[in-house]
Every structure is written in structure tokens, then in C-alpha cells.
Length: 106
Image (tube, rainbow, N blue to C red):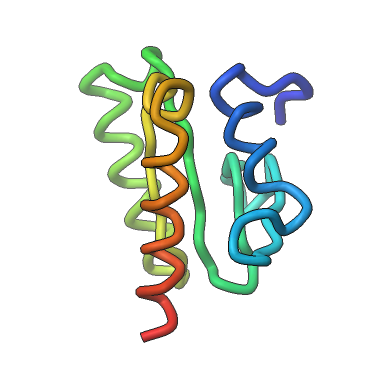
């Protein structure tokens, strides 16, 4: 686990913490098995990941795909956003999260 969040993670965390988004409780840097996820709503089994440039390479894409598959088979839904989107289009990111939460209730 990292003590200091990236600027993008911190920006998103400030919008998610204290049940600010749809009154949903999110946890930051939460362990699920041997994975550490950026943000998690245990109630909705929704994981939100914010990825920087280091995650853009082909080997990282394969790793993330396998990781997302394993988390999905454990019952979680994973949303991924690039750092840049979290920093420059936060309302769009929050709307995508709201839509994911709404779809989990249908």
C-alpha cells in the first residue's frame, strides 16, 4: 500500500470520501486477497481504479485484464479511469461511477 496518493487519486478521493457520492461509503487503498485496489465500495462490490502512464504498457494491460477478471469472478465490478481523466474531467468520472452504482441496483 502507498501512503501518499497520486494527485489523481487524491482528487477523486476528495469527491468520494465521507459518503459524498450518492451516500455510498468508499474505502481507499483496500486489500482484496493479494490485490490492493484504489477505491472500494464493499456494499456495492464496486472497485474504482485510477491508472497513470506506468499502467499503459502492453504487459500492464494484460496484468490489469487478468486482475479485473479475477476480481470479477469474486463478484466485484471494476471501473478504470486514467489519471488525466480524473484530474481534468472529474464530473464525467463521477457520473460514470453514479451510472455504475445505478446499474448495480437494477
